[in-house]
Length: 245
Image (cartoon, rainbow, N blue to C red; front, side, top):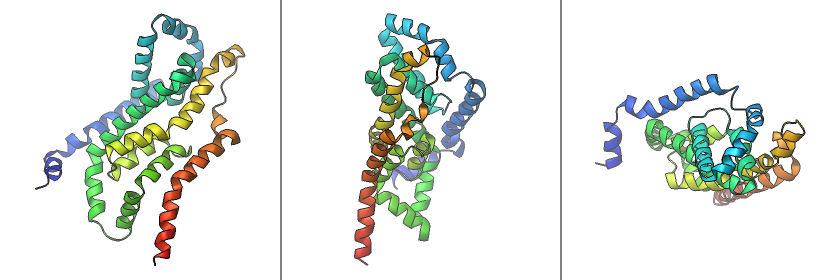
């Protein structure tokens, strides 16, 4: 008997769903208690303390920052955008962007694994065993996994949480998920980290940063260009399939 199938049947339903239940519970508590705390105003009010602590304990600050960011993403807590800005504010565009990407990828992987453990294997097995439209959808995703994974990371309209859950439900390999997440979020992370790196001037003027900058033509068009490149293999495969009919 297949070892994967054997292991899956030995897991109790409660055991499989426990990680997702934990994430949902922490996320609910986090949104209730932290939604008015992890915001731009809090960062502005504590900016001098953060800078002083960073200057005195750079390595510790970096480790604590990454750990907090991982927890924010892994438990879907409010404040991910503020965390990205803080990475730029404390560590400049580089290595701030690197810290942001590593933390976001690690947190996303935690959600991915929780979703796969709780739902992914069973759902993927059912999709493989199904017929008709469901089977064709699953086959299409399998044939274009790299393109689809990069696409959902590059398009700003796709919520980060959704991009973490969906791949787990269609049995995407862990290594493929991690690589596509790490590389796919780099453009957006660099943009927001660079905004964070300029927060000192924004604070001095008593203003708030323009978080809609990612939708400015000079930023959005290159992102859409990358998304188009990710979509190109899917289009070519579809065209070749039609020619073969």
